[in-house]
Structures are given as C-alpha cells and as structure tokens.
Image 1 (cartoon, protein in one colour):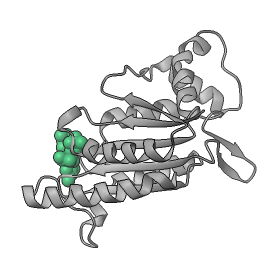
Image 2 (cartoon, helix red, strand yellow; image 1 turned 90 degrees about the horizontal axis):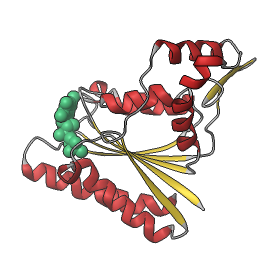
Image 3 (cartoon, helix red, strand yellow; image 1 turned 120 degrees about the vertical axis):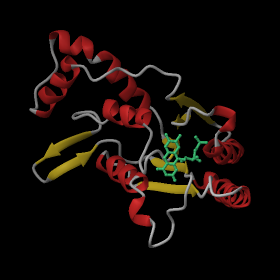
Length: 207
Ligand SMILES: Cc1cc2nc3c(=O)[nH]c(=O)nc-3n(C[C@H](O)[C@H](O)[C@H](O)COP(=O)(O)O)c2cc1C
C-alpha cells in the first residue's frame, strides 16, 4: 500500500489557517487515492531527537564515509527511525505557517534530524546526489502578510528554503500552495483561503 506522509508544523490544530487548506487537499486525496494510507506526523506533539554532541559526531563520521559504531550508533537509532518514517512515504504533504519569514523551529528541527549523509544525500565524484528521489511533495503554507508580488517576494525565505533543502535530498517535484494574506483583514483572509482550497482540491488527484 502506498503512503502519503502529512507533516504538520502548526501547533494551532482546529484554529489553523494552514490546515483549513490542507484538509481540503486531504479530502480530495482520499477520494482520488482510495488504496493509499495517510499518516499524520504532528511536529508539535512528537518528541524529535535532539542534536546532541554524540549525534552530531555521528553525522561527521558519516560525512567522512565511515560507518557509525558504539555509543554513536545507539544514539542514532532515533534519528534513523525518523529517516525511515520519511523514506517509507511515497509522497509527502507539509502543512506549515510562515514564522519570521521562514519555517517554524519544529520543522527546522525535523529537517536537521532527517537530512543526513548516507540516508538522504551522498557525495559522489560528480557532486551531491539526493537519495529521496522519485517522491512528489506538496507544501501548503499560510502567511499573515502577502509575499506574492515582485516587491514582497524577497522576504519569503520559506518557499525557496524548502525547495532547496528537499531538492538537495532529491525531491524536485514540489508544488506550493500559499494562502496569503491571513492577517490583513477578514475579507482578504476568506478570499485567500477559498482560493488556496480550490488549488488544493485540484492538486490532490494529480499525486
Ligand atoms: C511566531 C509567529 C511568527 C510569524 N511570522 C510571520 C512572518 O514572518 N510573516 C507573516 O506574514 N506572518 C507571520 N506570522 C503569521 C502566520 O504566518 C499566519 O497567521 C499563519 O496563517 C498562521 O498559520 P496557522 O494558523 O496554520 O498556524 C507569524 C505567526 C507566528 C505565531
């Protein structure tokens, strides 16, 4: 059975503007992919492994082309479990608000845990090779302000960062749906959510 992994990076649950859009994506996805399972991974409810010195040492060891051993190997079990969860997905949906022009710290923590040499990327004679290739990704975001115009685009460090880091890991088929602006008046918010929901409804069957 194929799997969609839904990574949730807002702590706001029912109040979340982002999830109002993602829920439409998921309803449409369920209709069009009846043989898929959807696994929610809520970053504000899960305890991710912290990047202790032992775990960071392990990363440098892997970067040098050696294998983990001893205490480091034990400390890395939690990291490998998260990587395996990520790689077990055939497609990924990330639901994330913009926080301070980028992503919430929980999502950054998750990325720091899973983007690891040997597992998500490797260095080859010709450069970096992403190892999570072949997966489709949708990223649904919401933002207080609007970053879609030529003048404001430069302040959006969220979409370029996520495109780059997952591209580095080999995932290049990424579609963004940005609901914006959420905090510049109720009318604008309603319109933006409805428009993002329509895009989400249409995108899901293409997965
Ligand atoms: C800690 C924090 C930082 C934020 N930073 C930004 C920001 O840099 N730019 C912006 O447009 N909105 C910012 N916002 C507003 C949120 O992006 C916006 O309200 C979004 O719709 C929240 O999504 P959610 O309801 O799914 O959590 C911030 C909100 C919080 C709580």
